[in-house]
Image 1 (cartoon, helix red, strand yellow):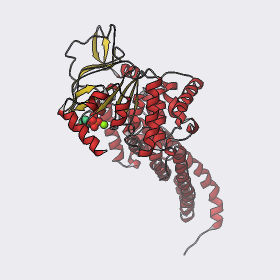
Image 2 (cartoon, protein in one colour):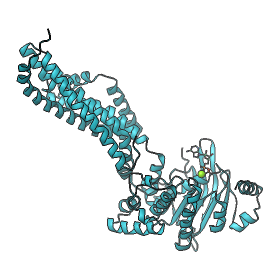
Image 3 (cartoon, helix red, strand yellow):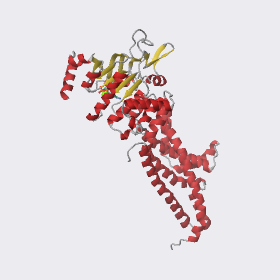
Image 4 (cartoon, chains in turn orange, blue):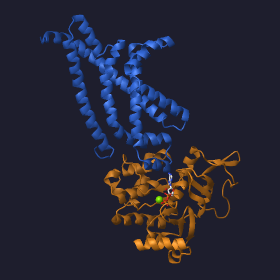
Length: 273
Length: 224
Ligand SMILES: Nc1ncnc2c1ncn2[C@@H]1O[C@H](COP(=O)(O)OP(=O)(O)O)[C@@H](O)[C@H]1O
Ligand SMILES: [Mg+2]
């Protein structure tokens, strides 16, 4: 059961510097298992934040809660200053309903470990479906936008192919184009290279590099590729047991981690690779 | 002993072929009703509204646990007691449509449940509405899985149409019975009815299998 809103949270974030994403006291439980434990996390506009940590520490859950694929138990999430998990009603905040969520989700794009492309649609159709249905773009405009993005990810030549005829790396690049076609303010990556053969990981990380350089896009990325995280992130968050154990610029987290748990984790990961 | 009369066959064949039209019509109409109503049943069992959910589940279970012929009698003969008087055709189509809808709803449900969770999440993350998610993403992917079952029930409904003869729908069985009692000969009419059913069922089943393979190909799925 959802708990009532206990604390008074601001109805929207105002002021000089509003973060693009804000988690406040966010708790998520499955039964007795506490997966996120009153999490606080701010991400600035245009920032690339990477989440690392042991398996089961709640990394995927952070992204799923932000995308509102499931409801949180308590706390609040804001995106671009507006509440995401809550909506204003009669001058106060209540839990968001489906309709409100659907509108707020357009601010966020998500790329999944297993791509989740629609298998009965071509690469291009995958990229124009939501822009036409949700953003009410006309078909011509949607195709133009999609072709531009497919070109950017190097998949324009395969625009007419179904996902089953594409390699994992190619499917993931189409999935990135599909998410970008909604022009989200925030883009989420959940271990987007974990299901890929080693030789095609580079083609996906190359696309993500491009996004960091080109767009003023806020990104949250869960990854096990420590080298890539170190190279690309503005900030790295080490998750442990549903909490942020340690965070900071990549040089600090990878170069001189303070927490013993971070040291242990990085030691084990670096030894394994 | 084995007394097969070709002249009699030639005599009654036109009448039986005409009745075949009614049989095919009954199968198509009944299936049309069942296909649509079955989808309604399947989706109703997936809503978050618990009362709708439970009621539909129980109705489906009830229909699946009682004989079709009873349901046909019931709609036709008990209906009038509640002020609902229906023609044999209307009563028959309602009964057979409801009966097969409850079976098809399970086929649809299995198809829908076979669509991976990631597809729902992708649709959600793209802000697609529930109606669009079902119509554009989920149902198209459920069809290839459901198609084999849907095809079996199509042949099944066709083979069950003779039950409509019990309330006087002038389909094949009813006509064969009438011919038999008029001429006191049942060998030829019943044999012909069997032949006609076979001649339609077998090619239809083969056609459905080919159609299934084509649908899977078109959806970019591997053949089964
Ligand atoms: N739907 C669910 N039901 C029950 N437990 C879940 C569910 N989803 C995730 N969990 C649990 O929550 C914890 C965190 O999961 P997750 O965020 O996926 O971890 P990570 O991505 O860091 O490996 C794990 O212990 C996992 O088993
Ligand atoms: Mg994970």
